[in-house]
Length: 218
Ligand SMILES: NC(=O)c1ccc[n+]([C@@H]2O[C@H](COP(=O)([O-])OP(=O)(O)OC[C@H]3O[C@@H](n4cnc5c(N)ncnc54)[C@H](OP(=O)(O)O)[C@@H]3O)[C@@H](O)[C@H]2O)c1
Image 1 (tube, rainbow, N blue to C red):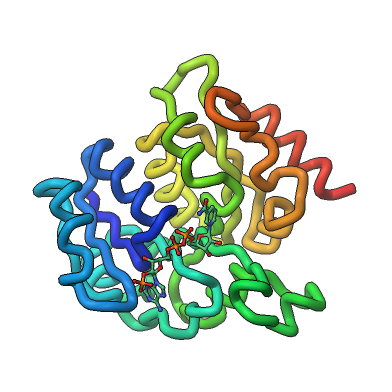
Image 2: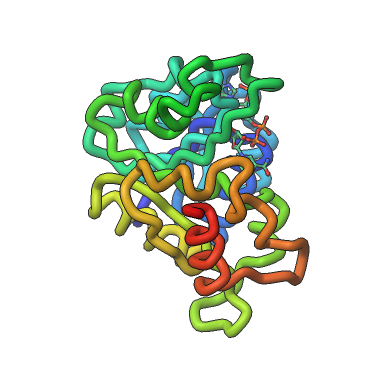
């Protein structure tokens, strides 16, 4: 069975971990503190969940979700993530993360910063464009007419296949936006960011997400 490692287990990471467990995955949760600080969260998830350090989660995960405030990316463990699919949910908010000049000038993207730090990992931008509560309200079984879609972007096809399989398993279709650079099309402030999922019960299918990605190119 596939294990999903989580570096960051807050609103987004914690929600994804629960959906992963419900879809049958084993999960390893971590944060910047001690595994002990995740005791209650792990207990609530049941026997398929355990807590560890970020390095533990990175080592254990067949895929690893990074869901931390962007400013913390330089603390991510590098070596255990080499060769692995890393799903990056992070967004850049200067008011939270402090100003990062290369992002303020649009010289690069937040996912490229993460990828540059995680040498050898296969970073896929995913989940950054949906409010965490809508992951819960909009997930649907495969083939449901009102199934929503999530965009991904990444440079490694096998990592994107792993991300697609995971996203499908937890209840969403996937729109492959292209290489990691295409993450620009669904970062903060684009038409594909948050707005298409207009609230509980308002799905955004593949056509809607494709149209939003196209609109971002204008
Ligand atoms: N909330 C949303 O709806 C949403 C939607 C899309 C994207 N995002 C993005 O996803 C990321 C996470 O958002 P969130 O809302 O889940 O934030 P959050 O609720 O504040 O959770 C952040 C998690 O990261 C952990 N953390 C902080 N620094 C860390 C480090 N150096 N190493 C390991 N873990 C660390 C925190 O635990 P400790 O502080 O205890 O270490 C906590 O578990 C952000 O970049 C956010 O912009 C969020």
